[in-house]
Amino acid sequence: MNHEVNYAQGVDGQIELSGQESSFYQDDYYSQSTGAIHMKVNEDITDGSVHIGVLQGSGDSSKGAGAEVGLDSMANAWKNPSMELEEDYIGTYHIEKNMTITTSQRDGWKGDSWLDCCGGYFGTEYHPFQLISADDVFNYRFVNA
Image: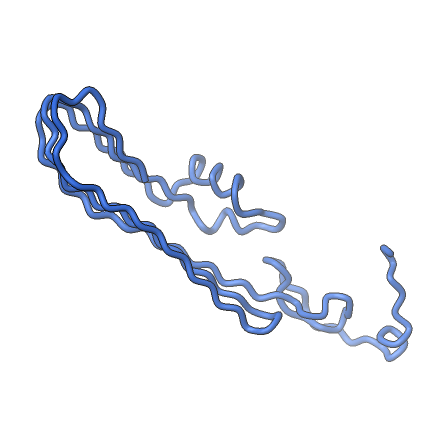
């Protein structure tokens, strides 16, 4: 979210900004995170210019294998936005905006990744269940060690 005031002869008003995040983890197999950002603008502008913008990336294409949160999600917002809002005001205005963006993410992953038998999600990839022998479990050798 973006709010800019430029070259104004007068600005009178209030801006409220807030953000919150919560996470839930269940053992080593599941996590859920939610986040929200909020911006409330109530202002009078005299002979100026105001820009208000919101940009949010699409959640689907940022969850590919190997995708990381951070720079990849920022680039995704520019290339494939799920929400894009740009408003420009020039002159004398009374502006009221109340905006909230919420996101959520759920991840399941494979708990005992060293055992090939245990299926489930690891990151964003699904690994199917497989049958293995007792030798594979008790005589396991680390290939990459």
